[in-house]
Image (cartoon, rainbow, N blue to C red; front, side, top):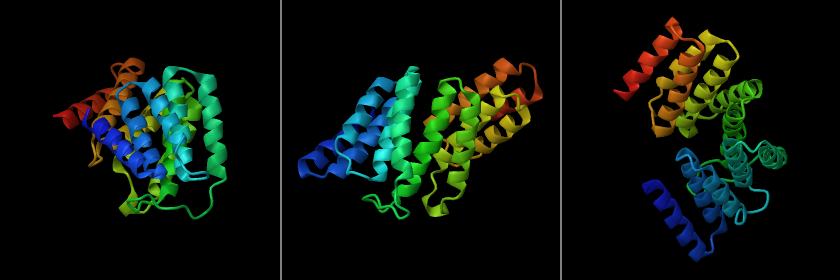
Length: 227
């Protein structure tokens, strides 16, 4: 996988240069890539590798703990998820109001917020706790909408809407689930991870609401984005 190769190469070069923070950012990327490739055990290992290098009190430590927690949730390890999520939450609450910039100039504060909301929403979906998933997905949508347009991640924002749609579908709010799903499909950043989460919502709607106009509408919309 090209992305993984670049992340590994970045880690190695940063390691040779003695740049711990850049090593940790590369590990963060490796964790995301592994999870999207459905390799949660490798994602946990990558997150822990990053935590060995991240500076104390840095917002990236929040992200890496959140990476580990959602990977444990994907594996179905509720206790490990809860432990690592708690560590991430404590670090997040201790962050200063002003957070440092990433080497490319991106503010790291919103990146920590995305992890603590979007990652946690996905985690609770995988664990089958749909009320908590709904709560964190709503917070994720709010976090994205509060971010300046120049720094918003449109693909992550779409995933937040899809996670919220999945949670709402499981909770019986079919029309709201469809609305969030369609909003996500309108994103100009329909990357692989967004398509995969849209397929998850499609599967839930077809399974729970077979024969409904809402399920048919979303299924047609998903087909259009693939086309």
